[in-house]
Image (cartoon, rainbow, N blue to C red; front, side):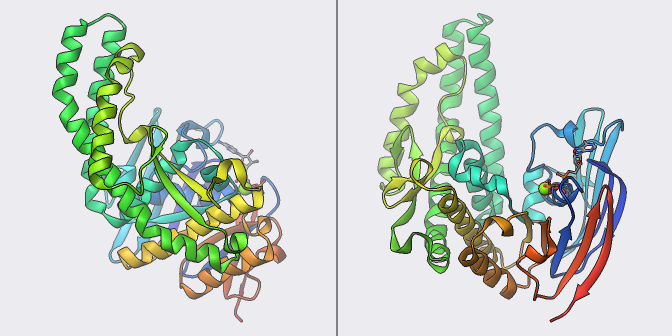
Amino acid sequence: MFLEKIKLQNFRSYSVLNLAFQPGLHIFFGKNGAGKTSLLESIFYVTQGRSFRTHQTQTALKSGESFFRVQAQLNGEHLLQNEVIYQDEKLKLNQNNKPTTSRKMAIQSPSILFSPQSLDFVQGGPEPRRELLDEIVLTRSPSELMTFADLERVLRQRSLTLRKLKKGEISPKAAEGLLIGLNPLLFDLTLAIVELRIKALSEILPLFRESARQMNLGSGVDISVEYVISEQEVLTWSPENRKKHLSNRLLELADAEMSAGANLFGPQRHDFRFKWAGYEARHFCSQGESRGLILALKMAQIVYHQKVRKTRPILLLDDVMSELDSERREALRGLLATGEFQIFLTTTEFEKSGFESIHQNVWHVDGGQIVKVAKILN
Ligand SMILES: Nc1ncnc2c1ncn2[C@@H]1O[C@H](COP(=O)(O)OP(=O)(O)OP(=O)(O)O)[C@@H](O)[C@H]1O
Ligand SMILES: [Mg+2]
């Protein structure tokens, strides 16, 4: 998969920008605030239908304008025309002139991002980890998109019921009746998603460990992951025990859900954790070790994607080379140099891009303008 053309209108600091790209490495360099991350964000937007920077769509709208639009032509197995339009406080996604969703878009035109915020996967709250895990699940099993859509629907219906109960708009008896009707479906979908996540985690774990080994991370300490449901690690359990645990949790949480007026059961409450020598990495690892862990996982994600989908995702690397030590930089460079990926990399100093000797397209970014400065062949 590669991005052939992109057009931005009123996106962040860009008024109108038309760019054409080739496969291979593209470096965007420029000073702080020049618009480098915004460019990567626009590529992420038009491949995945969402921002990696914010959930508040309007923040990407150029100050004083009434709409933004990002259009792209992508070349994979088929030609794809993707479009993202934000107007009247609504975000619309189209692929080949048909409306689509962000998850569908991400499956059709995959991109993988590694940025300084990726550290949050190790050190931050569970939401980005769940999103990353589900991204990996859908890489492996795109047809499971329906399972996620069904889950969202049943969670919405339950949430509405529980909120009405809390506000006194329906009686406890009526609420209980509605919940009893929805619970079997919620249970089945939760179990299905848990097993999908565990399968994906188990398959990516050897690749993750291999990447960690390649960059000499932790010099031989055991690096692993856990899947956590209500403070219990269940990755190593049998499927029957996981099913029993979930079934008990659904019953145990029933009263708490009624008094909270919110869903407390389901895969949207689970987490996965990084383990380092048996300790939870979040509380144990240094910044550099955490960065190494997430880089190892991202590298595993790239390899896994190639393995299961037989295609190469577009890689977006935002200002990351300068944060990595020489060993990690070398490991990443080794993977990328062999893969024939299309890569977009930002850096404030071109000399520190880490890719000086590789065939590359170099662009200078400066305050909403971008100029191609060189093409270097080694
Ligand atoms: N909605 C918006 N409208 C106009 N300008 C914006 C908007 N959002 C952000 N900006 C500005 O766009 C500029 C480019 O930001 P961006 O994050 O892309 O810079 P960058 O080149 O990645 O910088 P750094 O090297 O510091 O990471 C910044 O000056 C920012 O203030
Ligand atoms: Mg930036």
